Image 1 (tube, helix red, strand yellow):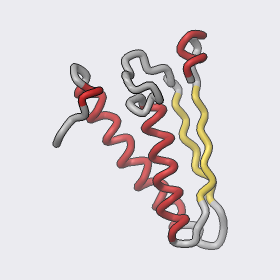
Image 2 (cartoon, rainbow, N blue to C red; image 1 turned 135 degrees about the horizontal axis):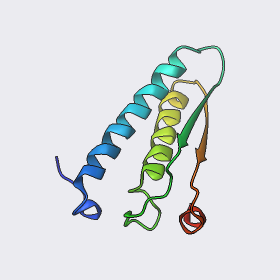
Image 3 (cartoon, rainbow, N blue to C red; image 1 turned 120 degrees about the horizontal axis):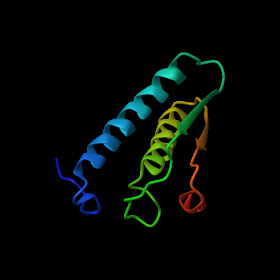
Image 4 (spheres, helix red, strand yellow; image 1 turned 30 degrees about the vertical axis):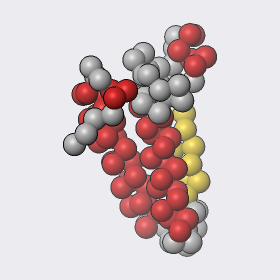
Length: 102
């Protein structure tokens, strides 16, 4: 497995986020398969949203960025099959400076 350069020195974060992404995409697919007749609302809640060590300007290498990306991927998979997943995200961060970045 190749680890992207923005994760140099924090490889454990890459692995944690890979597990998170794979889990969220699979969960989104399972949830939608239970409701073939109507839309499903899938939320991602991050209770420690500030990422102090992310390097990507768009925060794609943060747990928040990974979570949102996974929701979008799950929604796209089901959209291709004619089903709708409405997504939402809630980010909780008590510190003001990291909150502003979100």
